[in-house]
Amino acid sequence: MVAPSAAQAADSAREFVSAPALILRSLASHPERLAITSADGDGITAGDFAATAYRLAHELLARGAGRGSTVTLLTGNTPEALAARYAAGLAGARVVNLYDGMSAPVLAEIVASVDTTVLLVDAERYAGAAELLPLIDVPTVLTLGPGPDTTGGTGGIGSIGEDAIAASAVHPATDPAVALGPGDDLGIRHTGGTTGIPKGILSLHGPYRSAFDFPAFSDARPTDEKPRLLAATPLAHLAGVLADLTLHHGGSVVLQRGFEPGEVLAAIERERITDLFVLPPLLYRLLDHPALVRTDLSGLRRLSYGGCAASPARVREALKAFGPVLVSGYGMSEAQNIAVLGPHEHDRTGLGGQLSVGRPLPGVQVQIRAADGTVLPAGEQGEIHVRSATLMAGYWKQPELTAEVLRDGWLDTGDIGYLDADGYLYLADRLKDLIIVVGGHVYPTEVEELLLTHPAIAQCAVYGVRDDQQAEHVHAVVVPAPGQRPDLDDVRAFVTANKGRLYAPEALHLVDAIPLTSVGKPDKKRLRQDAASR
Image 1 (cartoon, rainbow, N blue to C red):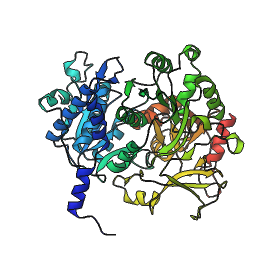
Image 2 (cartoon, rainbow, N blue to C red):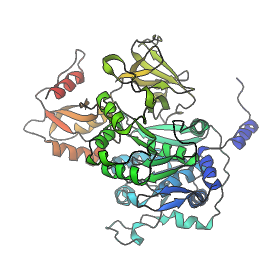
Image 3 (spheres, one colour):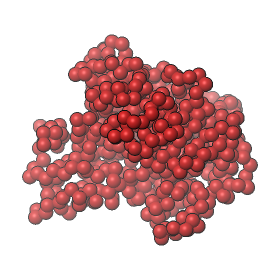
Image 4 (tube, one colour):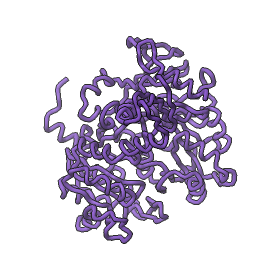
């Protein structure tokens, strides 16, 4: 195969329209429509929002954040955060989100590892910036709006940086027309890692842009109805992807600072929300809230859930409460969406009444393989491998780790499952030792290595335990150091201070010895069984 010439590559870049450019064109074409409603209830028109993003893109370019650079966001669920993400994409910079729930030292390592050129901070994360800034060396730090030292109520935070949005007012509200191609870097999304900082998953413009070529809201709804998304989970995660698709397809996004079930139910009724994404544990919180029975849910068209295992019993309960609007999704940051189970497919069950996660999306190939690589027939359980146009480019600065999971265009997901005769996919387990909790992923090794530095801990093992609703919780079993007796509050505080609250164990079990497998490894299967029997 002959590599494209420089001229051919330039032509490809001229013809290519990136997802951020596509979204902003859609917004600018109908400037009067409502695009964003902030968590404080302020409405922003499509035209005003697009103008902010365009001007901010020019400002980032003026600050040196163009192609090949990185713009890192320390932001919450704000209109400014969304505009900044699009602006960085237009400028050609990689976008990196610093997730809430990680400690300042971990975030500082991420900032350094991704070669941050500009750090942008919004009002939701000013307090976090006060902890982070002394730990980093970044060429430019800017706020998205007036900084805390100019708004009153500083709380001792002090100055963070110049207001990028105010500074951008001198620029035109036009696309800066940076030539981007499908092979240019789009962003780096971080997930748990076995050592050091979380793994950085590098995505490119082309694969992400391809998602906009298919109908995103093909379920039953009036033809003249535009989607209205409630973003109650972080824009830094899947809610941001859904916001992109919603705005591109002429809809609007209602923002909430975080997930509080009563506020979510109130917003569904008040704002006539059509679309919402939740993790299964958050779905259960909606089901258990007393306001559910008196909430008008008639506008809801699509209640998507995914990210971790779901309880079949609770999903059936949700179907009764919300109606035929539930959509299950299976995907991962390394591959984007893999399979979807529609509202009228939820009666599809497998062994032991297990719910299917759906059928692979168009253009996505799924194979179930044995440990030796042999492709297994329908009904046989094995390792799930995926091939599609939306796979990641690789792990940032980790070619060896990339080579372990990407081979010949196929991604080894690390999950175990099987396909039935009709092509529906079922998940059975994870090959990799990973705990999926609300807010992110926890690799036990990360927490174990940290706990072993605690003076009261001699040995430890960290593992995930699912409750009766299939939600996972971080447990730690500990052999105390001589004369010591660590307690849960102390261990949680220690882990939170060093790694972030995301990683803190919810249960601590003190033992004289950790049970081992025949090869001398902690017997985490037995530990899970012991925890479940307590």
